[in-house]
Length: 121
Image 1 (cartoon, helix red, strand yellow):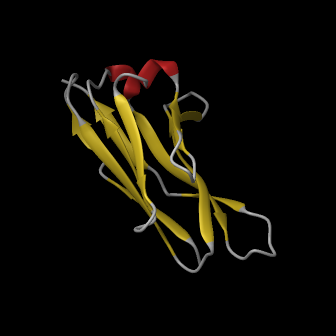
Image 2 (cartoon, rainbow, N blue to C red):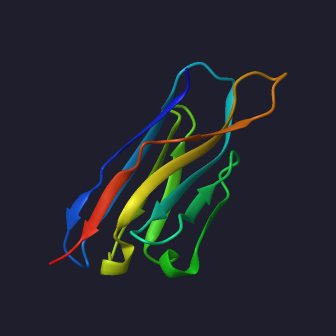
């Protein structure tokens, strides 16, 4: 069974940094895009950053100069480095990956359980 497990959330002061990590485990053939989403209270879940299987990255404008997404294909992990955090960055952050279990099956989306980021002084 495929699982995504996140770690690294917590409480940080404005201007501080955190590093979120997500590891995929289980039996699968390959991982396509890996993403980080976030959901703040009362708001819809939004895509924050994506890294493709070939390593191309993109992120939303509000975090582009502050957050960095990266992946390690050998370890099946995706990280999100969060710098210069602002109170509006507080949310539950979710890891998402499009995973191909077998070549004969279509890829599926998998989600982690979420890790909370609190930005407060």
